[in-house]
Image (cartoon, rainbow, N blue to C red):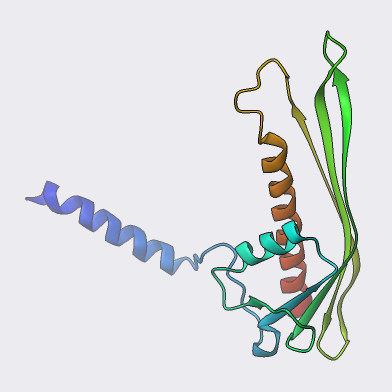
Amino acid sequence: MLLKTFPSIFILLTILLLTACGYHLRGAMELPSELKSIYLEGASAPLIEQFKKALESSSVQIVNTRNAAGMIITVANEENAKRSLSLGAGGRSNQYGLEYRLTYQITDAKGNVLQKSQPIEIRRDYFNDQQLILGKDNEEVVIRNEMYQQAVRTMINQVRFGLKK
């Protein structure tokens, strides 16, 4: 009888311990009510998409107009680069370096600067042997999405830090 109830007891204890230690879902943002809406100015479509995914679990929303926003994130100089790092025996590139750069500034609706202009630079290398095509088709796309995700996490953490000051 005890063995049958053990999994239930274990799950209950795990839930109690997680809630007691202050555990919360990653990505949930706690912001003042006036900053519950964000407008992204100058951001590329993939960056906006990653922002929406990152904010899905929170009450923060991405708005379409500057006037409806409590916080404005202005993205400038967003740029992607790809370079060859090494060549294979056939003279083809088989290792690439991906770079993603941008500069951003965070202001409130009144134009007060919450976070001064900050650069973000992310680099990733990957090996792409053209003879092993299976599974390599989307590798660059996946890596680029991860780079966008990292940029979004960096900006969100800066927002949290800036609001705590």
